[in-house]
Image (cartoon, rainbow, N blue to C red):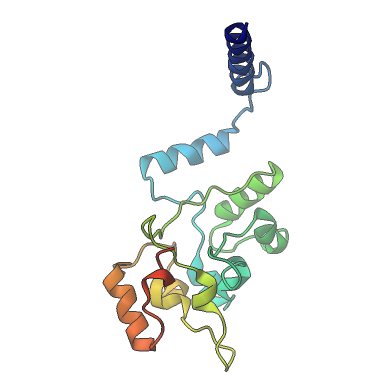
Length: 190
C-alpha cells in the first residue's frame, strides 16, 4: 500500500514537473532586434548588448557612478540600472553620437525587458567583495575607495572593458595594508 502511494506521488510530481517546463501556446517570441543582439553577444561573449559610452555619461556629463550603480553604497553588489533609469533621460535625449544605441534602450523599455548586460568583473566564488564597505563615505564624505581604483578610468572608456587589475588576494591584501584596514581572513572569506 505504502509503495503504491509513493509510486503515485512520484508520478504526480513528475507530471507537474514536466508541465512546469512545457506550456503550449505560451512560448515568448523573440523580436528581430533581440535576436540580432543575442547573435552579437554569442559572437563575442564579452560584448555588451548596448555600447554604453561611459566616457560621455561619467566623463563628459560627470554623472556619478552610483547614479546608475545605485546599490553600491548599501549592498554587496554595485547593481546595474533598470531600463527605467536609462529611459528617464533618453525619453528626451536622442543620443547625439550613437542614436542607434539609444534606440536599443527604447526597444528594451518598450518590451519591458531588462537589458542583459554582460558582467565584466567577478571575484572567485570563495571571495566576497562587499561594495558597500569600499565605497562608503569617509569623514569628508568621499568614498573610501574610488571606483576607478578597481575598475580603471571608467570615465574615459567608450565602452566598459576589464582593465588590467589582477583582482587577486595579494592585490587586495596590499590595498588593505596601504589603508591600514583589517586583514582578517573572515573579512573577505565568509
